[in-house]
Length: 88
Image (cartoon, rainbow, N blue to C red; front, side):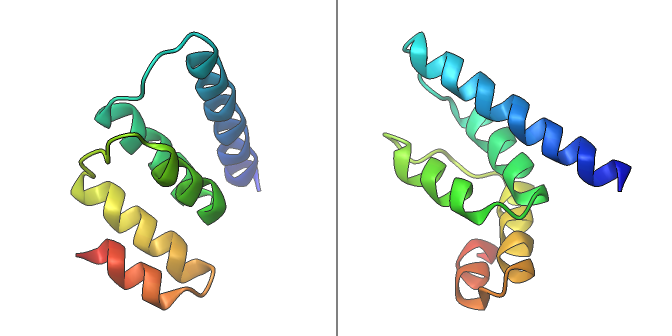
């Protein structure tokens, strides 16, 4: 349970940092996108993952482990088709 609370807190921190970056007109780089996606994937927050991916002006290069974490998140919420897309 403590682990879940820690993950939730991380997701809230990430959301706040993203808001600050947007407010300061700071563009997301590939490393930031990968780190944020991994936090969302750990929380199985597929809605936020999709929103971030759609909002990226240029698609960031996904690291292998980020793509795998995203695939696992999609599997946890029952979306096998999207999990296969991120497994490649």
